[in-house]
Amino acid sequence: QVQLVESGGGSVQAGGSLRVSCEASRSFYNKYCMGWFRQAPGKEREGVAVVSTGGGSTYYGDSVKGRFTISLDNAKNTPHLQMNDLKPEDTAMYYCAASGFFRPCPATLVPGYFPFWGQGTQVTVSS
Image (spheres, helix red, strand yellow):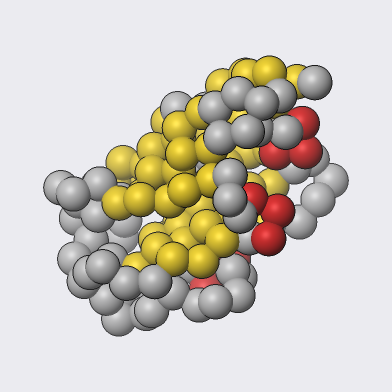
């Protein structure tokens, strides 16, 4: 079993930046997909960005392309998410997710692909 813990959420004005991070109870070596999803009240969970461990592909949701960047922590291969030019519509609970072993990142960001989830960190963007 894996435990994931998010941190770094908070409140910011539109146009500002935040960085959210994910800590894990163990390291992720090659052949995993790590990602960030978000869920606003009353809406479905939405894929934000994913990245393959071992130097593989990254994929972003259309609404965050060009503004958000996903990267991996060198020690454990857990994902960080740098969010720039934040907009009020980015307001949501942000969740860290990890795939099972030997699962490459899918181009379509589907929550059901990921069996391991953190509890989330709140990001609030005011206009």
